[in-house]
Length: 353
Image (cartoon, rainbow, N blue to C red):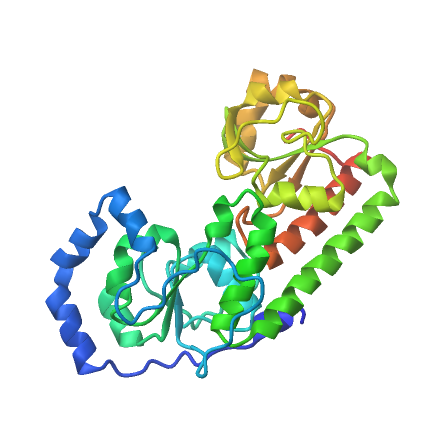
């Protein structure tokens, strides 16, 4: 199944009337209960991940080796409270009826396209409960960060907790496993396998093309995002970008596979000052997302930036907006973008920002 086919299937987004019992539940809970739930300690929130409220499905503690049996009536009125999980949902051919801040998805995830019909349900961690009630979902797709709200969400509909792959030491493998878990819950397990196979074939094709141009792989790379004119977020060990570079046969200067010198990361990323890049003088710099004109103007006046080896040698290339913790569609986009960037650098198309 192609990514375009995966995002073309839409679930029925028509609003169902709210049941009186559910409305009464919300009135009883009220704003005070909601605030109390969100005020739980970190320990209580962590404990909540492993204990589902009555009638709610517990989140998977570890991905199964094979997909469990699909539910008899797969959910189709799905609400997502995470943009990366929304990407995977769309790639599986299911359109959510609502998600948090949909424009942020369009700005940071981009593909698959999120239809205009998807309802904005509020903030990621403080959704509009009255609106959730009106939409009458049959599944919430949430993250461990929603642990303290899960009790209240589960009174409206079952919950599915995913996104643990974002902190996994092997994030790509974990992403594939969670894709299967989501698809199985939706009754479309076959689409997950097709999506995983599509990502594998895309990655292998890019790797083969890069291997045929050995000169493109002569220098290692650093994949980073500009935080401000003095700091970068560099992706190393434990990141999806690093896993993808390995699959592509591209050396990551932030995570050398031989010897010492790996950069310490948290959830796959390291926040470093610009001068840290001088420790990898041979590396080309791949910046994720376009550099805004105001930022470019500041870098042009920044002596540290201008002195970096990659900048002086015009070994800087820009990648499009790609979510570092995105799904398999984002990772395919990353592979294709890395190939284009290395080709541009090899042909003298690099820049200084």
